[in-house]
Length: 326
Image (cartoon, rainbow, N blue to C red; front, side, top):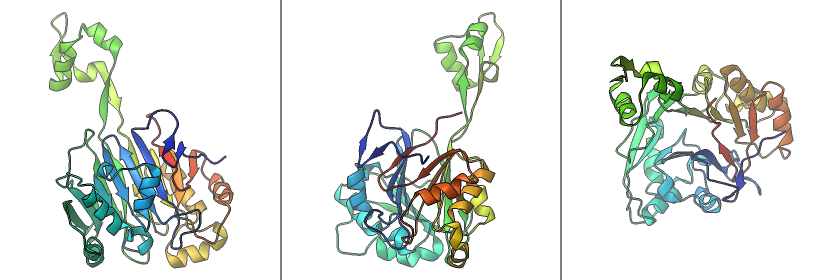
């Protein structure tokens, strides 16, 4: 069974998820009646990372109920049109809405001439400050001077294998600690004493004993997500996907066209699902579909041959929650 997003057209049931993927478009080179060009907003508490805004992203944001002010960063994997032609509209919308924070924009350094043209593609009043961040190598992406997020996040880029320079991205939050009430009670700690323990890492218990934060808590693993677009199978795709809670990955072709996938620098649904399965990804989102295929169940069948976790064959305007912590 295909796992669907929890809402369409901005109309969700229940409370809005604090961490979710808002799918703004799922087509590859050629959009269709049902699929817009790429566009993906990863909402993570008070952060919003817009990946690969293709043509029509601004309108899709309106349909999905996504405000421009929710975008705190833009990340481009590469400068093919289906991944970047929506950038002018998004930037101009940020200006029109007078978004007050600086918006970092990361992209492969080789794409700088096109990015500079796209952000000034037409006449408009620039009222938003962009921090252009050309990427030269694998590694952490600079934080930029944007608004401080409630949850600190690390954005890492790795070069993929396509017909032009492409970077994939991975989002990680640091590990935290979960306090254990029974152990706190056993140590005689409560109220302000627990606050001091969290702040200082050590406190004095009810019987005068020294209590370390490690004694009364356990590690709470930070959550993660990866975004892998336009690539052949490569080590970087596996590194980005390693153990992530949510993997968003292109699956342009079906396995019967694997030779075309290799030639054009793309993945099949089976290859994408294999990366997810062998990397231990918990939730898999397939997207970036060729217009030659009309039945999404084909992608599901192919992926299910190798992947048995949560699976979403993405549709435009789907909302896919980041899985709860294990």
